[in-house]
Amino acid sequence: MRFISAERIHSGHSFFPAGSVLVLDDNGVVLDVKPKAETGGGKVEFFDGIICPGLINTHCHLELSHMKGKVAEGTGLHAFILEIEKLKKPADEEVQEAIASADKEMFENGIVAVGDICNTSATFSFKKQSKIFYHNFLEVYSFDPSRSDAAFARGTYLAGQLEELGLKKYSVTPHAPYSVSVSLLRRIADHASEKNSILSIHNQESPDEDLFFKFKTGQVIERLKHFGISADHFSPTGKSSLQSYLLHLPRDLKILLVHNTFTGADDLQFAAEYNKDICWCLCPNANLYIENTLPDIRQMEAARCKITLGTDSYASNHSLSLTDEINTILKNFSSVSLETVLKWATFNGARFLEMDHKLGSFEKGRQPGITLLKQDKISKKYSSKKVV
Ligand SMILES: [Zn+2]
Image 1 (cartoon, rainbow, N blue to C red):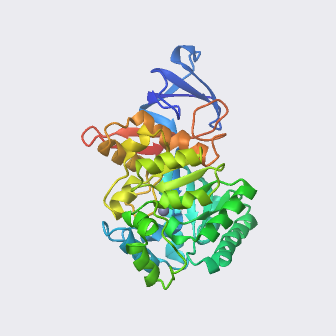
Image 2: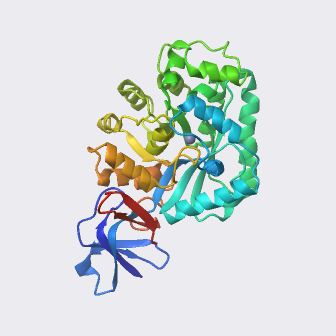
Image 3: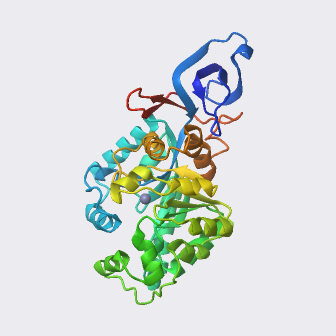
């Protein structure tokens, strides 16, 4: 049995009263949380700093880890996507080494579970031996409705490869509103309903996404042309992206909307009325990297959105550290407290990934791992590491 305490302990929901002690068994399972006076004189391991349950990164692309430092910053999503397509390559030794090193970095900085986007099988065999719990979002795309079947088959092909490795946590999921046809979205939605699976989609990451859906103008059109994809079948809806595509996804399954950099208050309201299980994943450092802007987090808090955090990938970030995302939020949004953002980084993420029976909080019977956060006195930035 271990007794663990720190300057402050975050439960996954909020801070425990000062002087609380976590009681764990030798495997790290939470047995109890009690005041120090009630620990019966057992030796308490004390950490300088804040401890919280292991962090949950709900949006990453581990397979893009080899792109670290290779993509220019601040060019906008359009140029970013063209650049990424050029840098994609088969899963050679460099790709595999980058995957292993990114996974190790996340584990050491206190991340215990990841919602990971997969366009290929490059990460699958590595994940079999990883200490991190992964939910694999098998991401499919095709804007051409005549290619819906082939695009969807790619998702089920990847699912088969995971099954062969004994990896069961996955869902076939859409890439982004502008890269999937309505017929492909419906196909994905039917499959998710059948399997009762969680979904993820990149949402309103650039202003051009709304321009495309409202008026069929902007850089999305240019990009489709660049890739030789016809948009002739597409008629603008006159509504925002979110209000155009969400109707084709299930009302009763958990859906993670990722980025939300250009999401308006009316979109937040629309989403909440359509589906009670929408979660909003923030990847602020990737937003700064690509578009040099941040989502309106104040507005999301006011609308009582369920928020989770993600690092996105090394194509658009300088680190895979949820704590660096927390630092960016605290620096730019003074209304957001550390107590709140830690809930987003732990319990909310675990709940979305359906891992909350084990991870995300210090409730009795959970085995969430322990992450230690320390604040630098001068920069005020937190750093984190796994301690249990
Ligand atoms: Zn992404």
